[in-house]
Amino acid sequence: MQPSERRKWLLKKIQVNGKVEIDQLSEELDVSAMTIRRDLDQLEEEGKVIRVHGGAVGANSLTKETPFLTKEGRNIEQKRMIAQKALSLIQDGQTILLDSGTTTIELARLLKTKNHLTVITNDIKIAAELVDSKLKVIVTGGELQNDVGALFGPQAHHFLNQIHVDLFFLGAHAIDLEAGITSPTFEKSLIKQLMIKAAARTWLLADSSKLNQKAFSKVCDLNELKGFITDDGMSEQIRLILSERLEIL
Image 1 (cartoon, rainbow, N blue to C red):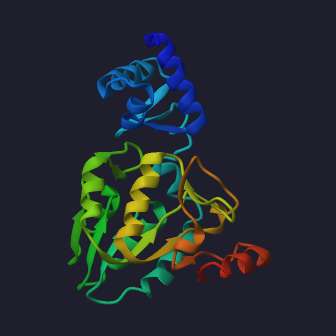
Image 2 (cartoon, rainbow, N blue to C red):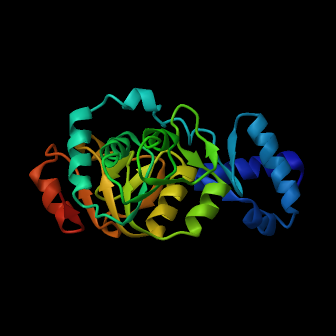
């Protein structure tokens, strides 16, 4: 297969599957991993794909991310009430994990009154919020997502694979009864999946505007969560369906 033909094949593969892995492609095409990397780099230069750790995704996979400043003021009262309810679940001495997001940063602001907690986060804005607190604060490390404040990439993956926490408070870009929790990018979904795996219990924090929404990449099914803290904006029908899968506060 000529290089131009191979790149066309790779692009079609990405369009169908959403993401491709270098090692798998190398075996499938019987070429070296370096050859695949060069092809993907070329496609990225042409604006057709986005390189991620170990592979590539379609060029449109990052387009639906919302900058922090855009979403910060949305549904602020609901977010503060959700954070207040989440605070009641936290006990002294626990280690908690806070996902990146505007609802979890409201919880971080409430945590500043606490003394005996360890807080781990992949959000530099949350870390900055806790600078003057008496809490033990740990940041995952990784590459910064500009305009959002989240950290991602191999360093964050390695760190999350090495820890165990009592509670994880998960933020969500989109929630759907069938699709579950989804996010705008594969990288963001992977970070969230590793956080869920690291936690004894996971609580979803999201206002009802996130319901009946789907994003690009799957995070998890709803029944993988301990519970969902939200406002009273959901319909009674959706509440009944959700309550069969997880606890609703």
